[in-house]
Length: 125
Image 1 (cartoon, rainbow, N blue to C red):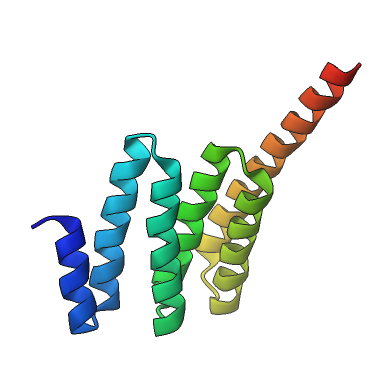
Image 2: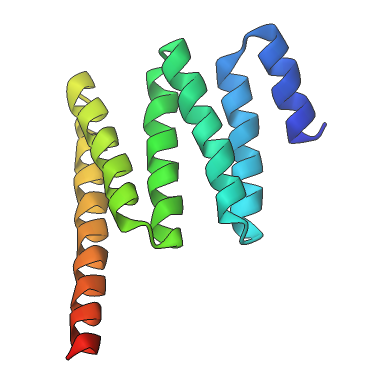
């Protein structure tokens, strides 16, 4: 069964986890094809569905995935915001492993941003 059909069927059944899993598979497919904005679209759908349903793991995963997509798109500030939101959610729930991972990813995103800023300054001189 293709992922869009699976997502629609799960949505009809009210199964948020299954919908998000199908959307995640679609997003990964499009990301591998280099269609990052389409991947972003499906990860955003996962995020919104997870928030509406109060499904915490889905919201954590969607924020991480979106952060990575935005990093690949060069939208570092948005990527950092996604990772920071994931860090906030993990800290609120006491998920310490997630907190550690989020801190590492956040540091990486900041390093990329600083590197880009330094390159821009060097080009101006």
